[in-house]
Image 1 (cartoon, rainbow, N blue to C red):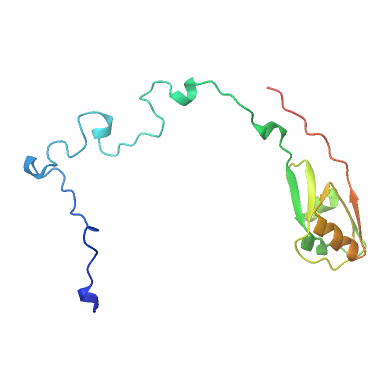
Image 2: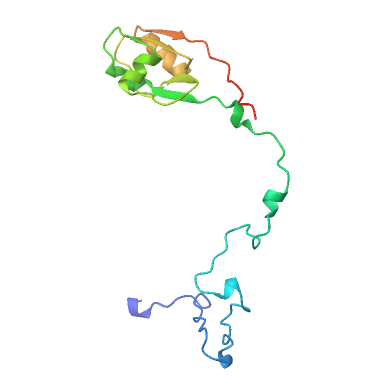
Length: 157
């Protein structure tokens, strides 16, 4: 078999729909666009859920059910390998992590994860530790200290 002998499978190719080529083509007059109006025009696209200016169904129905976003705790994450930037025997807390640029923005808690290797003896203070991070810090001769978590305040409506 050669390249010039290749052909697509039977039924996989369709002839092009020739629009506006007269009534005899089967696609004349309105060119498969139906009658007049917004959708008959070129460049027409109506977004999903649009009902012609009428208030759409998703806005007419009452909103019900529980949503967890008001109670969500935002956790800043730091990998263990990133703590090698600190000097040996350093005491690490939220402020020192922020100064080094390892965490930024607003958050409720800081969690130390066990990704990477720790090569220094460090005293780490954080709200949460993964089990692997805790064991790696202690095996390197350092200490882990838990900071009490603040209760998440609910934003009232």
